[in-house]
Each structure stands twice: as structure tokens, then as C-alpha cells.
Image (cartoon, rainbow, N blue to C red; front, side, top):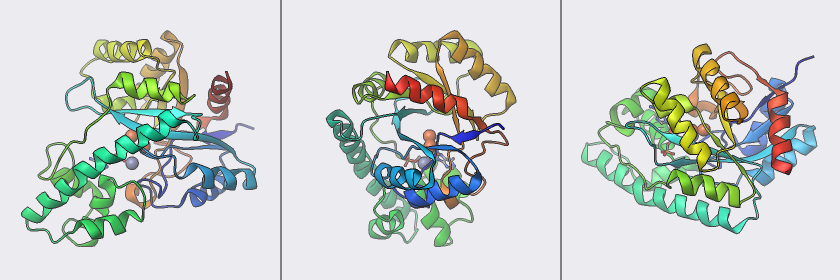
Length: 284
Ligand code: AMP
Ligand code: ZN
Ligand code: FE
Ligand code: FE
């Protein structure tokens, strides 16, 4: 029988809506045999998730997702770090720095929303995040709750996304530093959802991936909820060309991304073999 995994998921440690242990329980129910938790800028959920996974007999892969400066206009560059050592000092220092950058940005978003006439406070926003790393999906969910917008998508389109009325960027790591620090923390850097790089053609895509490989990239997320069959084919070819690990995941966020289900990415399953190869590379 074919076995499947999910190597990209978020919990309440960042902007997901299920606690780390609940993400693991749902993964078990969804029938996957392995799961990676990849919260934004934090490893706070890993211990809880790992404990629940061993309890349920699921293979657990420790992960993180960090944003770096995109090499493309209007694109985003997210780097997943797998098999990181949660005790590593470089890693904890990096997460502190990334959370500082959010603490710098988030109040500006709230101030602008208030200027635009929306009754919202930083205190409410922090409450919405329940102690997790505060991200724009929390603000979006609060805007929905308040009736300022109908959906999370509308919150991003009108206010929070690039070009939105309350969009502010946060300070990001250079790709070299994001990749370098994951390596220093014993981890494997993998470029997340390359579709979101928004490269304008295949040769630019190839150049961007090659540059990341030169900086120490170990893998590419081939299957993702935003990827269609043509994308998957392209990223598979790049993985083969640059000898990269292939990964895949749903990018599950609970009700903060309602159309994404754990264990499945745009109708596709992620083969267990990809997790096994990732873990084998992580042990080296
Ligand atoms: P932040 O970490 O605060 O920069 O927010 C990033 C999160 O917002 C990630 O989970 C993204 O997938 C999500 N996000 C970014 N743009 C959009 C969008 N247009 N619609 C829905 N979610 C988005
Ligand atoms: Zn997220
Ligand atoms: Fe991402
Ligand atoms: Fe993600």
C-alpha cells in the first residue's frame, strides 16, 4: 500500500488555528504516516507535536518556515528548515530576531487600520494570536470577526497583502543568511512553494533556484496546495537537475486557510519516500 506524509503545516505556535498536538492528531486521522510542523519563525510547537507523534506512532520531522528577501519583484521567498536542532543557539537567536521584526511591523499595520476607521487594537490582535507568533492571518481573522471584511482573502486583498491599504513589509533575512543559519542549526534548507516566487519565466526560475543552490539549498517543495500539475513537473525537473531533495505539504493553517486540508495538497498526496529521503539526509 502507498503511504503518504505532510511536510508543511502550521499550528497555534504561529498562525495556524490548531494546537501542535491537535495538528498531529488530525494528521493521524487523515491517514498520513509522517508529519512535519513548520511554524513561521518559531520552534515553540515542536516539543508538544513530537511527543504526541511518538504517542500515536507517527513519524515526526521538526521544521520551521522563515521568510527571506525575495530575489523577484512582488514575489515571496519562504525557506523551510527541516531536521533542525531545537537546542541550537544560532536557531534561537534567529527566531528572536525574526519575531523582533514582526513586533516592529505589526503595530504599524494596526495603526494604519485604525486610521482607516477600523476599530481594532493591538491588545485584541495579541489575544487573537493566543501567544503564538503574530502574523497577518491573525489580523485577517480578527477583521472578519469584526465584520470589517467578509473573508480572510478579502482582508488580504484590501488591507494586508502587498498593495493593500495597510500593507507593511517586515525586515527579512537575506537568502544567504536564511539558508546559512538553517545549515548551522543542523537543518536542511528547502525552498517553499516556489510558485510564490512569481518568476516571470522558466529561465528566471532556473536562475533563482541555481543561486539558492549555490548558497546551500538542499531541497525544493514540489507538491504544495498552490501548485498545479505543470508546476509540479517543472519543480521535479529542477530537483533532478540540481540534485535537490523533493518535499511536499499542504501548508495547513486550520480555519485561517479554510480550503486547505491536512495531508492533501491541491488534490495530491505526498509520497512517504520523500520524507524518508529527507530524514536520511538530515542524519548525515
Ligand atoms: P506574515 O507572516 O505575517 O507575513 O503572514 C504570512 C502568512 O499570510 C502566510 O501564512 C501566508 O500564506 C499568508 N498570506 C499571505 N498573503 C496572503 C493572501 N493574499 N491570502 C491569504 N493568506 C495570505
Ligand atoms: Zn502562515
Ligand atoms: Fe509560506
Ligand atoms: Fe507555510
